[in-house]
Length: 562
Image (tube, rainbow, N blue to C red; front, side, top):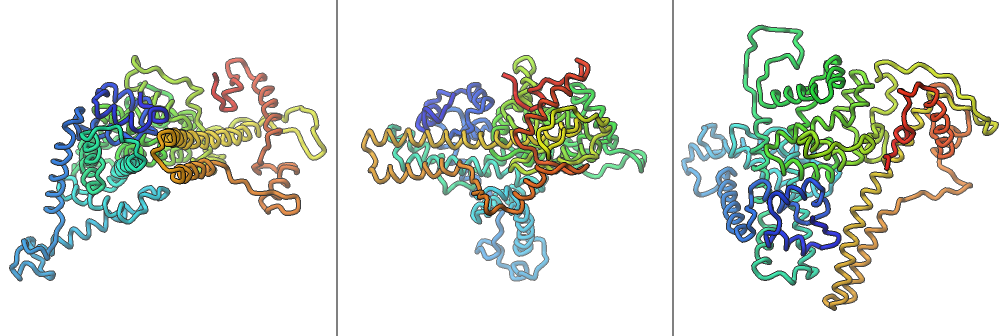
């Protein structure tokens, strides 16, 4: 297994260049998350998509051939009316000419297409700095424009930019890691042939061509989901016909209909609930499939899911399993929600806390005998929290449940203070939800720290080796260590200094709410001691139920069992 934190980038390259990794082993690495912090993910994707052979000695001619082909396509499809090779007839080569063979007509049509593409590209991953760079935007526009011109039967469809973006990110990230390793003399032990192969592979001058080749191979699998259904007249008009009852006119709708039927086999109660609410898979699943879940997962988790998706053929089968896993993952929230609540969960999918367990569930659906199903405690979902730690739009939606639980009597507990009152039993689930939210935020931050810490440990190890060999000057090593220190220092949570003399209005309001009795219907912020007290109440409340309805304490608190 590739372990970049211990073996380093050199060992990663050696395994691919020496053909130590076969296709089966490569698939295993993808499914176990070995490429999450590796510098060779783009190589793995190229091999899985058949852009590169498994033998590294054949890479250079294959890469050079694909780059020449892209250069030919680009020159053919990018119109330039001022090119001397264009027709010189003034009746045709005229900006005012509307003739179909006029190069200016084609030039203006291409300009409209590029404007349409640019509007979508400008909205791609706004939280990631790479996609705000003007050169990257221009590169993505060129790739999508050439693809649309070379595939007129499908053209450009909204959502294709979301497929291209992860490919661009992976190529760029691996190029940067290669340049960093080269500058730090980490690849000195490689022979000239290996260095030449890596130089050709990560040549930034052909970034656009490499992205185009990868994009075309992914779209080869996804094209049926972007094709137009055409105009198909139904045999008889049905003005009140439901969406799921209409005639299947495209491969995408057919695929979603099959996913709905498979959900009926895996989880009949959830299928009946969504069917009774008139929420077919076609209502929310078109975006899920066309974007390959690009809007439902943060980019690091999305890349790991793509590792799994690209390692399986055909892609549609594993995508179907990921689709089902997403529904099963939030099944409890869906079963407890009405029409509006279900749509909010499906259109704004809650964050996945443990993406490894989620991927294991999808692989279990793909091959139940070969992949075990993860424990329910590993699939704990925190529906009231977003990736940034803010409250999810579904939180506080008191009217989403189909049937509200009956009010419970106030718990009989000792008075803990003059300004404190016993908590009502109906407040316990909400308080525990706040606690789950805090746990989920901490889990996300721990995951981010693990990644940054692993990369920092890898860099420190390489610096120690360079220091022992004397290959770098002390000043250079000190500068790089300071950079690592800054990266580790950025993990420290910023805390506002609180002094008794000056408190913010928000802090004073929280203190006021915590010390005063709560009015009916007003949310409260619970502290650690209060949560302990609520947990005690919840134990009493749980034991008062029949044994079949009691919930284990660790499941209520959202804490995995060990």
